[in-house]
Amino acid sequence: MKNFCLTIGGADPTSCAGIQADIRTFDRCGVYPLSVITALTYQTAKEFYGFSAISEDKLKKQLDSILNAYPVEFIKIGMIPNVQSLKIIVEVIKKYNLKAILDPITISSAGKRLTTENLEEDIEKHLLPHIFILTPNISEAEIYSGRGLRNFSFDNLNILKEATTDILKKMYLPLELSDQKKEEKAVLIKSAITEPKKIFDILLINRSVGSHYELKFKLFENEKISVNGNVHGTGCVMSSAITAFLVKENSIESAVQLAENFFSEKFRKFIELPDKGKILDLTVSDEKTNIINQIKEIYNYISKIRKFVKLIPEVRLNISGSLPTATDKKDIAGIEGRITIINGYPRASGEIKFGVSDHTARLILTAKDFDRSINFVTNLRYKQEYIRLIQEKTDLDTYEFIREDQPEDIQRKEHSTMQWLIKESIDKTGKIPDIVWDKGAKGKEPIIRVFAKNSKDMLIKLDKIINLI
Image (tube, rainbow, N blue to C red; front, side, top):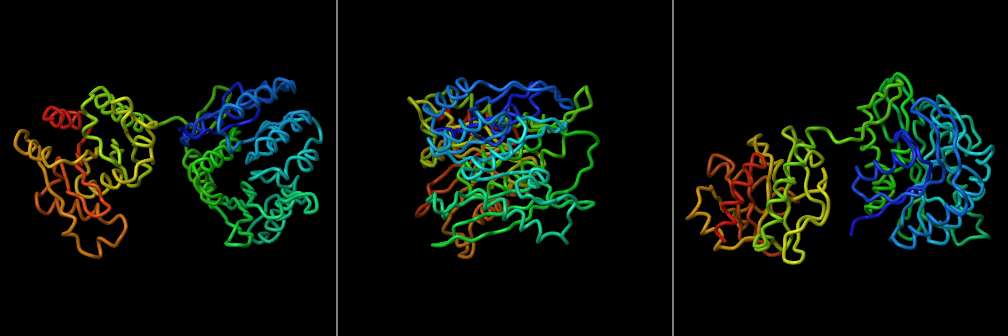
């Protein structure tokens, strides 16, 4: 089942921030977005004209309808327009035992209030003790720590650590009123330290270590990029990315690291709006779209042929496609959850995403070390009869990889088999064969691997194979 992620916040008609930015981020991070609106805002990327809060009754109905129907564990909270909305959100967190990530925004990027006056005091008193991760920017951290923190350098790092610790303490109920005595929680202060060429976020986690808890600080370094004008919605994207990666079963530290990486990549490209406003470009590049479309073309072919189920291995089948310049798994797309068998037909378990394939991604990356034109690979079920037919009735080049021939150090070293496999086939055949296959070993399923330059090349090879069965 697809992972669900819920965002609770204001609707932004520009789709730059708020609910719309959260939905776009969830989708890009590979989780299914659910949303509940707290307020309608009237704004552009540069100007904020006001908002109307959703009524208590309508807010409750939205939340209950979603949370009673779908298995939601993590929620991202953005705009809370008034104390009535705040009380409902607190009640919902407790009622459904939710882990909440709060982007404590009360002032828009255009400098106007998104809440009623002094709501920060109520948030601190009633909501913070029920928050799992808090993601304030430096001005918001000043509010919740009660300290001046602007323009700090590494000379002030201890003060920043103390301020972060003060905020974290407010995320726990008084001990005499709660069983919350020990529970993992975290604070991430965005842009805590700014240098001429670098910006640093500071993370504090109260983490479980064996039978006890301890505080861990971590700094995340990002390149400082000069941007003229206001960039709208950055806080929404960051906190939503953290939430999405938590939903995908990452630890707090790993989720924040993945979100930092995601944000850093997106902060290099902006969409310029007619009013000179700027937003992060979360769209998929034309180059990536081309790879995704080629994988769709291969999948559409496979999914329509019933007898293709005979070629689906126990580990399931995947189609991986690579950017021509790929150097990392994040540059390779695959089908999330791979292809399995449903009602007698091959069916994808998830969507086509970059960075979701592992085994087939490593095959492509290793192949590219020897032949940059290799961009696609598919793993098929092995049968000796299939190999015999391929060798006798097609012009496809095949190479048998014998696992027992691997040197012991290669067998012991994780992920090194793929490199050895490709190198051996190059040494023996002088090129990357169309097919590399093996008979398996203890704990290793026998597999046929088909290499191709593009979708057209892959479809020609798969057509030759399936017509033999």
